[in-house]
Length: 213
Ligand code: BMP
Image (cartoon, rainbow, N blue to C red; front, top):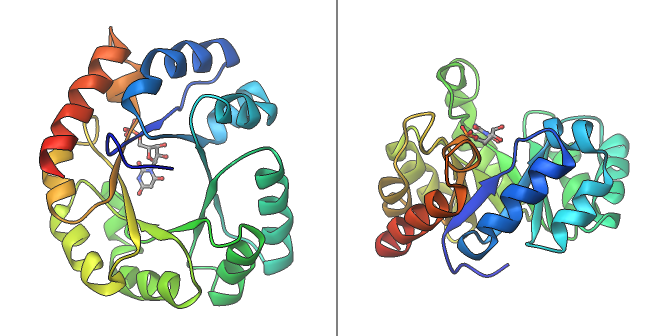
């Protein structure tokens, strides 16, 4: 995937029709589509293949199981056309490594989560999780746009790995600040797919992102 807009669409709608409506409308202004459980469960796993025809797909299953199960999940996901997957790091290095091997490196590891509860358990170990991502050869990490100072600190840990950053818009984060703090892409869901005019919302965000990059 090529960084032209700096924005990844979090497509958390729950039907195939709605997913196609939003994705078709905004595809020119986003670099990738992130798919999470709501859409996979609502539309079925073939939605991965369908969306991958429009933009590169990152599958956000937040995988966190034993290595063998992780491998099976990642194989099924990649076979449907995903470009990358997102896993949790707290299951340990062997579990993350299993994802990295099965996805040929195309893995983002969650570090500090963007919601208030992310400060309870994930924040204190975020640096460790980021280091783990680097050590096992992941493509990058997920870090919170709601706390750009943390994005900057985690950037210091991972060097030139990619940072994809959720929490812009509905959760209070700002795209330009997050990118200036060191994120590679911002991830945006509700502020785009719930907007009256999703295409225009995505265009404005990508404009803001491109200025900041
Ligand atoms: P929204 O822009 O509507 O808040 O969506 C954010 C997306 O990023 C959701 O798909 C959510 O699951 C995901 N996400 C997050 O918000 N915070 C994290 O720490 C990690 C995530 O994957």
